[in-house]
Structure formats: C-alpha cells, structure tokens
Image (tube, rainbow, N blue to C red; front, side, top):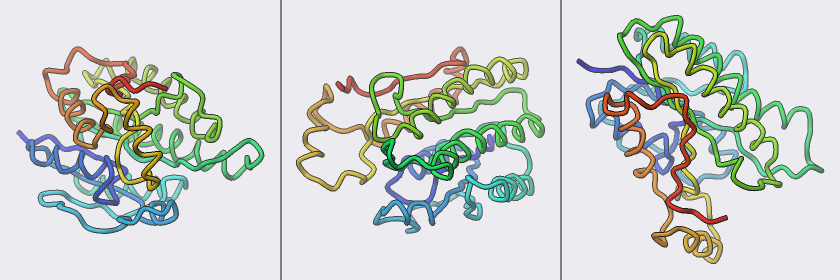
Length: 244
C-alpha cells in the first residue's frame, strides 16, 4: 500500500527537500512536493527553480508560507489529492540578521514561515488524517547547542519548532502518529561559496567531510518506517560529530 507524504522545502535540486522527495519516491511513497522558488532566488541559490530528477513526484504550486494566503493555498491544493499520512516540513526562512538589523517584519517572517505555517499544516494533517499510523518530521538547527548570534530570529523560531515537536507528539500520539524533529547539522547544499570557509567547516566533522542531503534522507526514511515506530517526541541531532 502506498503511503502519501507531503514534503515542503522542495524548490531546487541541491536542497535537502529535493533529495528527500527523490528518496521517498524511490522507496514507494506517493510524494507531494511544495516549495518557494522566489525565496530561494532571493537568498541567491544558483539552482533556484531548476528542475531536478522528479519522476513519480507530484509538484504542488509554489506559495509563500510566510503568509496566510500561501498556507491556505497549499492546504487547499493538497486537499484535492486526498489526505496524507506522512509529512516532512523542510521549509524554512533564514537570513543573517544581527541585532541592529532586527525589524518587526523580519522577525515575523521567521516566525510565520518556520512556526505558524508548520502549526497550521499539522492542524490540517490531523483534521484529514484517515490512516492507521503516520509520521511527521520537522527541522531544527542545533540552536540549543551553541550561539547563533548573527541569526537570532531564526534560532528563536527553531527553538519554537523543537518545542512544537514535543507538544504535538502527545496530541497525535493518540492517533498513532509519531512526531520528531531533526537537526541535520551543517549540510552541503551549495550555500558556502568561500573555499577556505568550506574547508574549515569540513574539518570540524569526525569524517572530515560535510553532511549531505542523502545523510538526512537516510535518517528520515528510518524515522518514517515501521522500524522507527518507537521514536516520537524527539529532537535528534544528527551532525556527524560536528564540533562548534
């Protein structure tokens, strides 16, 4: 029996979301992918909007999850395909933002995208859930493991996501739905262009290599399988021994 899964944050081939979509499709899931090309373009990713290998994947229309309209658009479009029993919320809003650059709008863009939209998507998941078991994975960023002083709005929003994971796991546990969050650590998705900085970070891992989107996908495939059925309410730091 095919399991339907929504994966957000899928809008460029080099990202974690696209690798998750490919791996879950290859494993027999019916994948519905959502992304925001405009956001990736604004951040400056060279592969923003480019089409990767998306065979057997249903690409939903882009929408901005920092807005009420964008979240409602995603929920309405997904509803046309019937309820999903698995969900991976890989989307994020993340900008460098020192304290002197904090604004009402910038803080709330982080909170709306990373926290509010996730809460509303989980609410919609629960309302339409019809299966006997399911699983949700959210993403954090190791914000509790060390300072992130140049991106505090992002760190604060991810701390909220970690707590959301624990709280929601108790509500959805009654429906045999597991809820976890994963911090994948520094992952090579093309965001570091400085060769010297790239090598410096690389040397902080035990294996002297960056984490890859495939490393993330391998963990999530386990969490969403029945072999991972005893794991819920956890924030998992999967960082390859990264040293801060």
